[in-house]
Image (cartoon, rainbow, N blue to C red; front, side, top):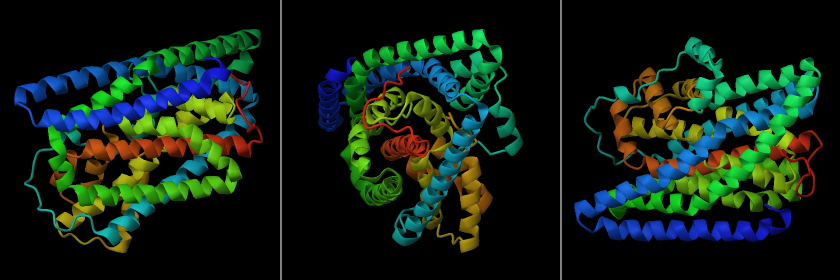
Length: 418
């Protein structure tokens, strides 16, 4: 895609996604009023549309992460740069995780979202349980086979292999330089493949929204309207905090960055899938002026360690369940819960419905009934839409901030393409 045609194509794609989002809501509400057979058919069609797009995106994720990360590390040069940039950005990730958890905790205490809900009956949630074990997590980080990790799109394991591979390139001499060139070309090809796949994004957005609303109807949104409004309001507060912190680093250029992130945010919100946004986010950051050697290094790390929206949900959701069952948590218990969530949220990268899984894992440690999660499951898709968009925003800011810290942030599209 030529640089000169990007703004037009970007506007068209944004409009198409927005139109698909609106049509999905209207169609879903209408289909919900029809017969069960029609609703079932609509749900199957929605599954096909969304599933096809997500499978195509997942098809390019592993080679794209590998290529961008290896070429990014290769371009950084010596190991000291890798550890310096990685150390700074990991410190940023940890800081933003604490900020997200504390905002969720504060909002949960002030808004009292669980008041007025009827406690559900106890159900077997064994399928969602995923207790955090530090030893298992440390062992999981290292893949037994990189092909297996790529086949499962386990980003954390792919990141570990890619970092070690990139660090080993200089020692290989001429062969390392040749391999670096190959990974750059591979990344270029995968990005072009992504451009083709992105043509189906409006279809996926329409299917995702239409299928959810056709199944649940507008009634569920009305019933949970207070909880949704309070959660979305809390997410908005986090957006303001993240944007303010990014402004302190980027200055007035934050406006340009937000403009570039609009389309990835809409896509992430509509599909509730961070994977679907990764290639587009790389492209938009490049348009803003972030070199691919920085974004290709920071984003894969962020997809494992910087899930601001998902982390905020942990503390907010835990307090919601505690309030439903009228269980009081002391300030010390809440602070301890934040620390546990901080660790456990880093241990389930790549687990489906990771936010729900982590919450179920943490609840028993603080005497909170796991059955309370059933109150959230019905609307979790709408919560996940906001969580995903927030994760995208946080990682977009992190990549731009890292480039600024390194003094390599340019005023426009970079020539440092893969």
